[in-house]
Length: 333
Image 1 (cartoon, rainbow, N blue to C red):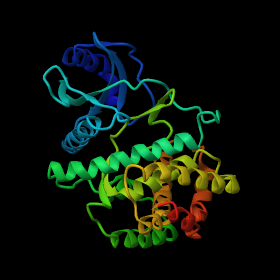
Image 2: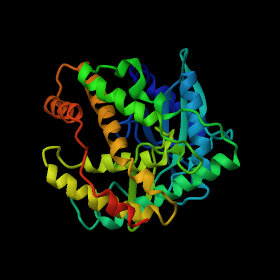
Image 3: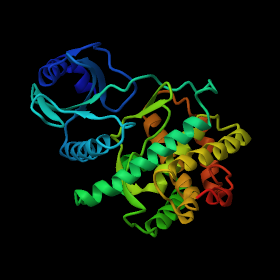
Image 4: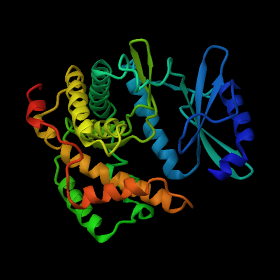
C-alpha cells in the first residue's frame, strides 16, 4: 500500500486515460485494502479500484468480475462492473517498474444506512437484504452451471489460513482445529456450495429511498451459501457492543428472522443448513480474533485489548456467538 501511495497520481493519470474519465477527488474513499477513487465520465460517475499486482490477485479479480458481470445483468440490486476503453473488465498498468490492477464500477446511488434511524435500520431493510442475498446465491448456482465454472478460491484459502494470521495460543488452536474438522465434513452440492459475497455488512451497500444497491464483492470466495448468511448475521450483530449480550441476542433473532423471510422469496435453504449457523458463527469469531490480533500486534497501540480478551474467553469456553431459536427459524422455510 505504501508503494501505491507513492505513485497514486501517476496511476490516476493512467486510469483517466483507460476509462476516459476525470478524477473527482484525489483523496481515496473509504477504508479498504485497495485504493478507491471516484472518477467522472461524460455520462456518469464511476468508482475506480486500484490493487497492487500479484498473479494471485489478478486471477481473483478476473474470477470476481466475471461472476459480478453475470450477476449484475440479472440483479438490479448488484453493482455492475464498467468495461475499460479497451473493452476489458480490468487493466494492468505499470509505473516505474511496479504494476497495478485497475477496475471500475458504476457508482451506487444513495448513501450508507443510518443505524441510529429506525425508519431505515429495521426489519424491512433486513428483509430486502435477505432477498438480495437469496438472489445472488440463486444467480451463483446458475452461473456455475451456465459457464461450467471450476470452483476455486475456496473458503479454506482465505486470509485466516495464512501463516501470517496464525497467532493462536494452544487453547484457541484446539477450538479452531475442532471447528475446521467439522467444517471439512460438510457436504458440498450445487444447491449448498458456490460463490458467495463473503462480506455483506452495513458499509457495503447504499440505500436510495426504498432501494438497496450492494457492492464490494472483492472478498468473494467459494463456500457454503449458509455461511454467507451466517457471516452477514455476525457482521450485523457486531454493530452492537459485545458487552450488551441480551441486546445482541434480541437483535440477532429479529435480524435473521426478517433476513431469512426475504431470502426464501428468491432461494431455498434447508433446515440442515440453518442448524449450521452456530458452527459458522463460531468459525467466523475465531477468524475475527485472528485478524484483529495479527493486525494490531504490528501497531504501537492496540485499542482492542479488552475486546480480544473477551473474544478469547468466549472462544475457549466454546460459547455460542449469539443465542437463537433455530427451531423457530426452520418453521418459516
